Image 1: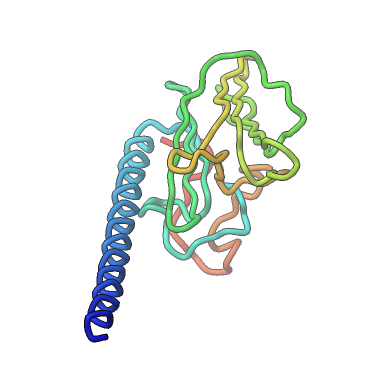
Image 2: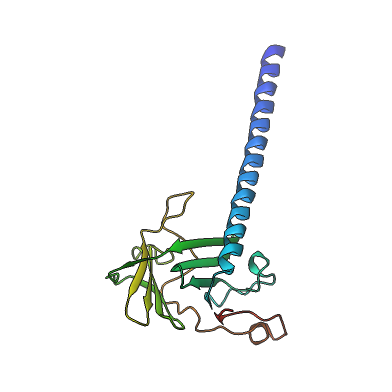
Length: 197
C-alpha cells in the first residue's frame, strides 16, 4: 500500500512540476513576442507618415508601447506602402502589413473606412463574414492618384485565425481624434494624430 501511495505522490509531483515548467515557457514566449513587436513598432515609427486613432472608446491611462499614443492607432508609411496597427488587447500589440499594388478589393464586407492625408485618399479594412465582423481579413489603401494597394488573407501568426486588430464593422478611424483633455477632462501630453514629422 505504501508503494502505491509513493507512486501516486510521485505522479502528482511530476505533473505539478511539468505544469509549472509549461507556464514558465509560455510566459517567456509571450514576453519574447511582445519584445519583438516593440522593436518592430519602434522601427516603424521612424518611417511612419500618418497616424489615425481608432476604437475611440478605448483610451488607455498609459501610452501604448511607451509611445505618444494613448489609443489604438493605425500608422501608415507611404514610402514603403506599409500599414501598422498599434493596439491593446492582452497587453500592447503591434502588427505591420506590406501592401502590394493591385486591383481594388470587390467585397461588400467593409469593416472600417478612413480618409487619409496626401498622398493617401482612403484606407479600408474588410471582415471575412457575418459571423466575424470583428476580424480583419484584408486592408486596402487608395492613393489620391487612384491607385490601390492591398494586403489580403490576413491571419494571426501564432493561431492561423483571421486577424483580430480591435477593428469592428462600421468604424471610421481618425474621425474622433480628440485630445486627452477632451476625452477625460484633464490635460495630457500631445498625441500625434494626423500627419507625422
